[in-house]
Length: 242
Image 1: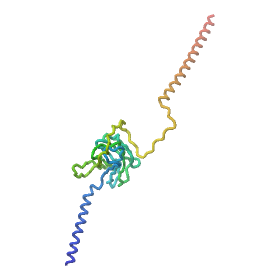
Image 2 (image 1 turned 90 degrees about the vertical axis):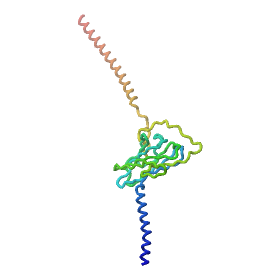
Image 3 (image 1 turned 120 degrees about the horizontal axis):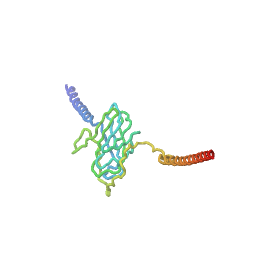
Image 4 (image 1 turned 60 degrees about the horizontal axis):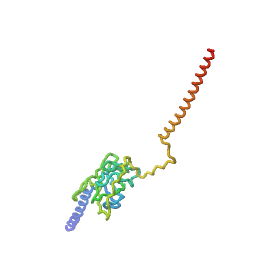
């Protein structure tokens, strides 16, 4: 009797512990996949900072094909360049940020890439709202920004910044235009041509000049032939009249 009661008392804590683990697993399930960001120098007004992003794969049937990012206030699209990404992926500037993508990654493979930012703004935190696209058309939206310490279901990657270094100042805005074409990742630069090719304008001008000279010579020869023929005709007619 006592042995049976003892076994029952032992089973209760075990069952409770297992139940707690199951509940924790269920609660952690939806938040298992997420997007994160880190920085080489997470300080306000830091220059030429490398930001590294990781988006966890959450599909069992398709791979990630693109990450679309909305830049926070204080970082403009023309201040961002691609540093590292999966082979063949490219960075394309958009009106409010950029996208990085290419051929679909293997199913279950996290998407990792890094960019270089000209300068971080003087703020306490930077949210990078991210849309994660898959080869089967699915899109995961990591766009919610936590406020007042409250948790959200689909949090955007947020970079917390330390105070600026002493003497740090904002840089002047970039004067370079926003690139319209995508910037390739991990592609070797095109080799420089051995010699400059002749431009169409130069070639056309040369051909026009040659054609003009030939035309003038032909016209002069034709005029001489006509004059000689006229003179011969006049001489023959005068001879008959004599």
